[in-house]
Length: 233
Image 1: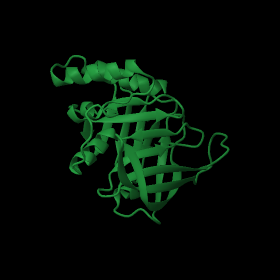
Image 2: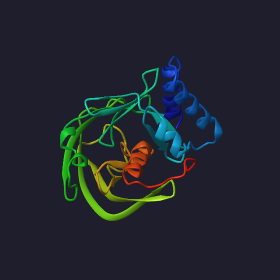
Image 3: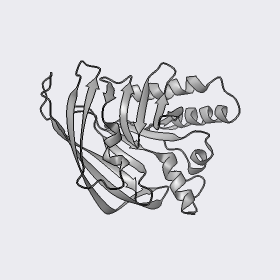
Image 4: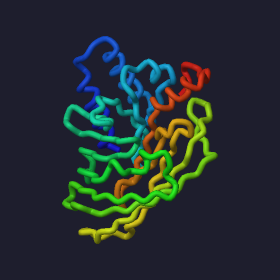
């Protein structure tokens, strides 16, 4: 999780020269990080923040909060002053920098079933490049979707579609691997199809990353007209 804490601290440094609402934004994250191992911002804090927040947990490590720096070509870039970054596209991690083994590139992203109205039964092929010297790795994914699931945030239930992605390495690995098959899970807003939460393992042997798009959650509750206590976390 150290890499993700560096992301947060780097983001704070990047914004440290700003004033007004951005200064408040920086102060709020600093307080949250100092207060407890797991970062949990209040409903009001997220609602009033000028930028989106993303919660990230690596394996069993504490939950951190990352701030969205900018959006470019439909990619959400959560970046630090030292160029460490996490890039998501429709809720999927498509590139990283500053981790132990960075994901450098994913091909055929436009065919990702997460971008389609229906995921059940879909198959997706793409190639992945890794910083550790593995290039052009072919990955095959199959998808299953289940309705009738719920997530709870700020003491409120949100109906979601649970999408289970089963991944297989189609290319023999250059390194010893005990398993070339693993799963990712995505929870999509049942109404809009937007990813609210996910658990993504970028490759076999890597710690899973839990992502909660907490600002999307707040927007969902606002659209639904749900009354949430300002200090709810």
